[in-house]
Image (tube, rainbow, N blue to C red):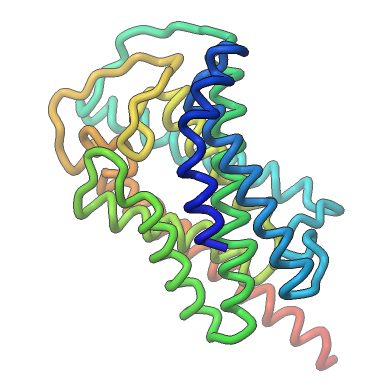
Length: 265
């Protein structure tokens, strides 16, 4: 499947550029939409003809998952809002101005939906799902988090803390999946994290500067504000993700114990 991905992505630039010119869409968005189609198509082929299971079984069951979607969106917003106002109060960043461009916001939403669905379907829905069938769940979680980190290895301004935080992001996005086998919470969290981080609060997203409603300025580049990599390069992100991972793990551990107690009774 990865070979299919590499071949399809090698053909993307020329097609993306042509469509971008014709429809006046950002080439970044067009490219990721092509990647999304290629990824979902390859996963569908493997689930149907190799694994012989329904495509939806990788975690796309939607019934009863509205709460997961809302929770994921709220969590991403809460982390970024707390980070933004905390860094302002610590004099690490300043709020300069704001500028609302409806077209750019809509393109950002489309772009980050495609990114979150693509990466979650591949890393959690397919790879983690496959490894859970043959490996210890925590080993599977670590391995897919390493793969998730590697997928971002060519992002600009990469350094030690960003690598650590990308790995922790893989753990955070995957830990609910190992208990629920459903993708809607990680997709919603992934989307919300990126969208509020970049287009709303003005941080770089994994080292990439994008359109943002809020214009902010860093007083200096350091490990507290994340520097040019954005909040994902910050030690605050390390702390926030570690706390969230532990909280989610404890929640599902307690839930599992209550379920087992109910069965025994």
